[in-house]
Image (cartoon, rainbow, N blue to C red):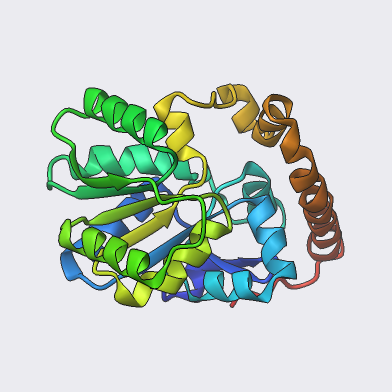
Length: 263
């Protein structure tokens, strides 16, 4: 699937997204791994998208990424209600990670895990090996929760590059992980680099995921807030803004039949 055709792309909140599903994303991963190069993938939810509208640095990262995926259900609703994209599903980080690991078993894709604590990583590696016998984990490390020295950063990149990894999964939380990937992309030799937020904690069993029905109805954020009250401020600062975008653009482009422009 090509990302070059404007008919396959849409713009939400000023950022560009392809009308892509899990199968399409994995096909891109296969192509990138076969061809080489380095590609950043941004998994975008409401919080990330609204934050990018307020942070020019984050906006630049997303604009330069090889792929932005629609993570949150509210973004899919916007795409379908306002842009008539006809998306059947979103492409979220935790699920994409599992599907990529499964897809890569036959081709021997190697995975590098960066982020989380040592305990979370140990549990994550153990669970992934149990679930996906034959998985090739090229490396796993927990960076210190402080700014790294130039020497430490250089050695970390050397370890990642020397591992021969095909996909680098970065679980540092958004937008820290997006900034980290973008900042070091020029020095990496890993074909695919993806920021997956809390996926490490989910798959390690450290944090429970929302029930499927809450995920389908766009309530995963509520489940997370109920289990971690510290997230209230995060969601209250961005969810209302996105709901306003959705209502405004639906009225403008659908009820009043204005033309929706695509990039």
